[in-house]
Image (cartoon, rainbow, N blue to C red):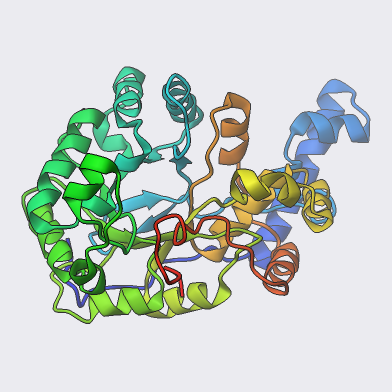
Length: 368
């Protein structure tokens, strides 16, 4: 794990160079001619059989390169750019979803203590037969365990349920600390004002657990700029590896993204398709459907690809095998189409899907 002063900017996907585009087109033409010569195919049949249109630059607006498969964290660890999110995945479904994801090529699973499904996720990972070290596993510290004396026991519970000896990434789930006793006894929320206003004691304990080998990387979730800078203004041994936040076409947060790139903070996007409340509307947007049609993709693939090309880790969630497979097949969008989506996303009022402020009885907005 590198020290706090070592925080290089994460790498971002760039559009293909003209040289790459020309080379890919030449390859595609040769492949089609070979298909016509060897199999007696007409032009359209040869183009269909080669199945290279979405990847090799054939046809109008087609794609040329694959996007970045991972980002490098300050520790040197590589975090895959697309993960399976398991929030709201029900018991009896989440295990099969994890197995389907790993079979499809995913090597990043995003979980949390609060999701209540770590045991089933752990069982699925174990049954997959894929070596533990090949899978990047994230979990999160819940609000009622922010007190330094409570953190390790909560972490150990997650490790036990997941049946692993360490986490690749452990996040402070929310920038709000609850008093533990009333929450555990009555699910009554009493905010721990001291730890909410100053999360440094929580962070120091997490750094200690990195040194003990139980966590490889630590980060935050749902932190706005003020909360992030409030934490990092302290003398840190390890800087936050990521900040996991809501990012979608409906809530693109361009200011936060620009700040993150400037500061070298890697963002992770939860609810990238708009969650259950916005996903149908998002996938039916004319601009998304047009880009999808032009590029031979599904609307979901267009949006997930757009996220990765913005330079963030994406956490799409599904329990349906076909959608899990679909969400993993991302591409690098041509710059024109990327810019089209970006402009459309940032030119309208944002619509946040997840905001528990009122539900937790707060008299302020967590994100303000």
